[in-house]
Length: 114
Image (cartoon, rainbow, N blue to C red):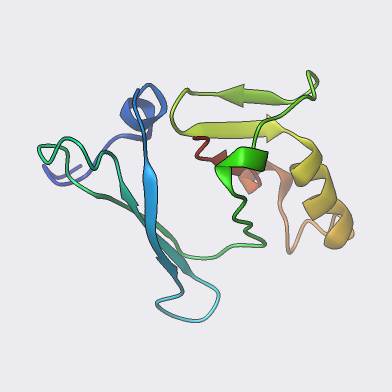
């Protein structure tokens, strides 16, 4: 890992506020997110997350992004990785649980709650 790279574990334990600055596809079926960790503290660098491929993504306004489902399983605070969620179930249904498209060991949900 280079000096410019941030460990997912570090991101998951982060506190404070984040802002989605930009989301785009640099090439077909890839995804890049630029996330500003704080507009109040310029000492924190912007985080760039890149995914070589994805099945689905969704952006929900923070006013509507809380979960009332206690069956969901996630790790992390500021950045969360879900291994069980209703959105993950929906994704599996949409792909007909095809292991060639959506291998279960590589399928997870990343959330950036406000």
